[in-house]
Image (cartoon, rainbow, N blue to C red; front, side):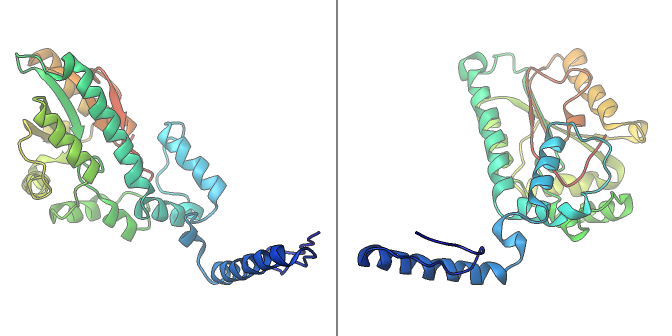
Length: 269
């Protein structure tokens, strides 16, 4: 029988010689793991902060049950940093992109209508382009308009690989693709266009940004107006709509189907 007194303490075993040999190997491995674990930050193991609480918080964010938050909870900063940087975020985005691409193949038997009016709408920030380096440096704190403008004007946001692939897939299948962003056109238009081009987002039908008339209105109002113009005034059929915020996917003319890309870094009402 075995008697254990602690997580990393040795155990006493009385059994056959062969089983004792296996047990000895197990003890060596356990001791090594305990030694490494005791000297390694919690985030190394994929937790990052209060695991159960932060995982639940992130699920609440993605389900749109957590609203109005201005910054990642302090106890979840390490958790979010790990989620974004250690692979799970990119796996989750790839899963969303895969579902969107699979859905696109079902539309008109994988052949958009001949009139060229089957369209998709994609958000830009943290859908096509990643602001993760900026928010990581800010420790996922409250939104700072001036600091973000400085960051975005540099035009160095990395492209998000799975959405790059989805974009090319949609274009390759003949869909019209519109990129819609809440960025200000006057101040960030050139840098955003150049950033998109540099990261492989070329050949889209139109990049639509906030003009002077849309400054100060909510994301839902602004993007609803854009989609309404596309659908009701220009005749496009919005087959799919992809964004990292629920405010990208709510309001008027959202499309036949919406796809939410994960983003636990910030909230846009």
